[in-house]
Image (cartoon, rainbow, N blue to C red; front, side, top):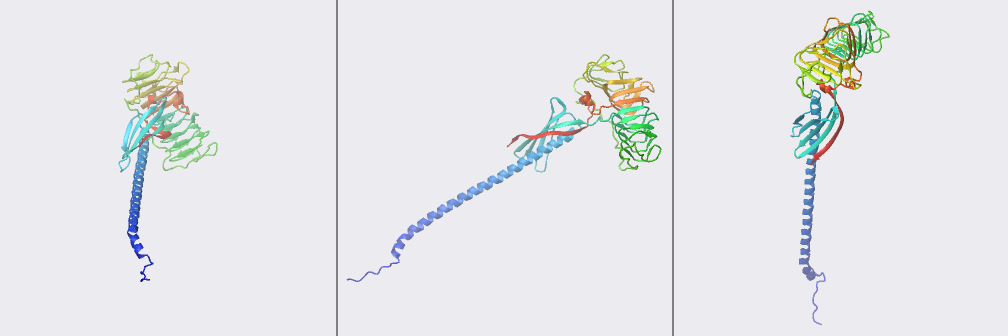
Length: 415
């Protein structure tokens, strides 16, 4: 046999043949992996970018909602002193978010308003809508005067505010409702169904009842010099209270002319039984006898009331008399108004045509700068307020309201 050929059983020649092919496969796999990694990176970047964009949009939407809500608060605050619908706008915060609010009346509800507030932040807009009820607070007293009162026999149903002293003689009297007196009280013989508060001294010779007494100086009831035992009920506050128990108040204002008084105006003439009238100078209503519907008399001078007033039909009617220039509201002798609720307002005097009118019977509310009717006085203010008697606040706007929220919702928002 010839010499045998030495063979490398490790397969070196075969491995050498395979290496180029293996290196090609590895390069393909690496390329595939790189493509996958880059693709995943792109997906992750896109996802992160979308997440960031979504977070930014969410933030803008929330800022728009906050701005719209701030607009509602701003409009409600302005409505506490202005009953006329309007538009308001403002900036919410340093980011540039802003709001624009429109206030419109709600049909069939004279004291209800619709507030529509659009909040904006960058490209986001959100619209909030709120319904509110405007509750007038200007005429909550049955009897309100800024001056001292020297009275006689009183029967008053309703709250009382006296801006000076309250001096009542010894005749029996009943006040159903709380009494607020800035000065001193000399009450004679009295029955206070409500409470009595005064910044000065309180002195009552005899009292049937009083729910609560508070004084800024001294309290002297039954001439005992101290808070009495029953029939006084509730708490008898010690004197020298700080702060004083009665806050100083002023008459609500009647700006004229004002959009709160709707319609056009003619001077009042005898024979009119309804409507809204404005007179330059004085108005004499002494010949008026009956009303068919609500009537409002606005005058720059004094107004003389009729002796007696009735209504036609069963529907409630209201008489409002307003002196815009501190004229007097003049009372006839034995003024008797049991059937037609009356709101009389003047920064001047409520006084008889002739001194010492015998009696005053009054249904409604009396607001006056000074009171000079030394007579048997009967005032009845309905406990549920004048509105229940058909009184239209828009005809004599107190220009002061509290706001009651009824509903709030988001509407028509973009994006």
